[in-house]
Length: 147
Image (spheres, rainbow, N blue to C red):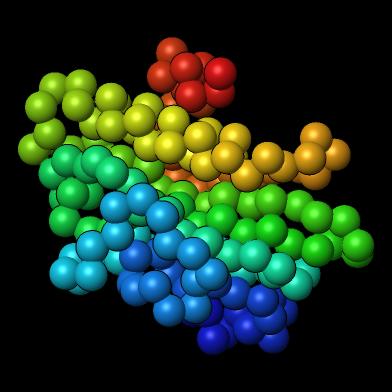
């Protein structure tokens, strides 16, 4: 897939959790022994000037066996910086105790918020978060994530 996108999107990150090669920094709870990746990558038409991966601390059910987290990039779009985070938050899983998957999603979103805060991104540089948040838009859980 990434190879086929290369002509239109020449700037690409590695896949989150597959390893540390290709990333400028890896934070969070990366485990080399976990052979399942987080499955998230970012492609861009504009130069990527910084790329990092962050592996979430917690997961339950099937999501706990891999290095699930988020990709962060800083791009230079026509001389202006933009920041993008791509993620796949904890999925609903019957193996998880009731409500645990929701609690984990909230903690994962808090990890994203803290990561952004720690970056001290200037107010005039937009930050975009995308991916599969595994939450219904407009729900109480969604509202809590948006705060």
